[in-house]
Image (cartoon, rainbow, N blue to C red; front, side, top):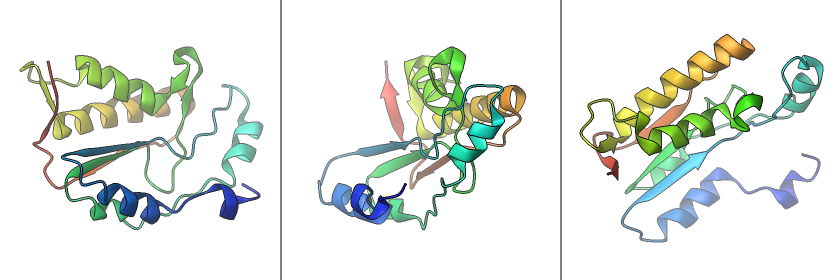
Length: 150
């Protein structure tokens, strides 16, 4: 945080570089604003979160053929689940990929299904267990697009 100019990269630059790949499909999963405090230690949590702020000006729109999953909105903290040894978002994103997001049981997961799944699970766990508002954001031009087939 003290040397962000040297150790960081702007999201716009990341997405510009991804677009130049000319890949058939690009998926970006960004679990940012992570502070990972142990439950019951809100002082250290707030101190760790204090400098964490992301301003997103929709650089993902630079990717024509992709999708972007953000762990929270730009003004929220991404929470950690000590019992899962992951962030709450990453835990449910991975569970979703393994099939839990397949709402209609057709052995495919669309962006739309993954979006509904991670938003529901993350919002619920962040609020119930930690009293924190966290709403994942999913951006894609075609949310009907299939991201996983079994």
